[in-house]
Image (cartoon, rainbow, N blue to C red; front, side):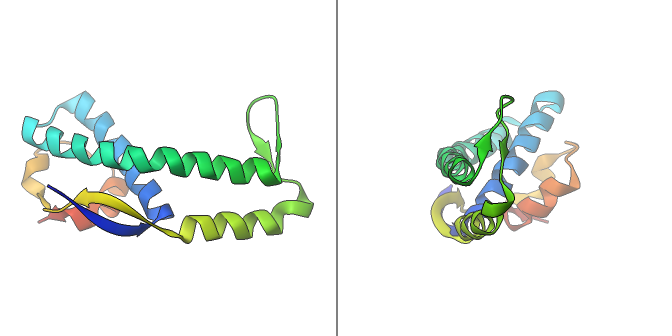
Length: 128
């Protein structure tokens, strides 16, 4: 059901967001137990790596920026170039993650309404 694959950090983040949109649609509209199980297993794998990614990304933000009262981080102009380089290097590095080994047939999604952004990110895991 799952296999190891090397992916860029930025692509792992995109998968995490796509799976969140799927989960929202599934909760609102319902999906088959079979599809729900596959997607839940996949989401669990992405969540494990995403937590580490988020922590490291936050570390980079706080390294170069100043945290405000509302929790946001402002990057001063003097640090923008260094920040951009480090965050870009981080997002473009590869990590190993477990992904779906078998594509999901498009018919399995049934009448579930999903945003085009989901289909764009998830296209490598869908069989027409």
